[in-house]
Image (cartoon, rainbow, N blue to C red; front, top):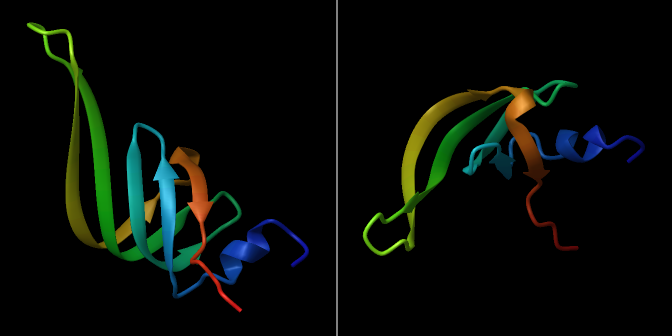
Length: 89
């Protein structure tokens, strides 16, 4: 590997984890990407975490919503972190 994006190149056709802005997480199969980290993911599991404050008790309520998407285009400017699959040798 010579460049940072080489690690992502090695993850083509494998399941990766993508953390996005606004408490959004994606797990899916990487089909394509470019130098801006725009990505096409397939068989995606999207998890969105929301934080609310209960007005009566002032307690923080954390809610997680999950959905599956067949194919998803991810704009690179929302990507915070990309984690390739765990490789054991």
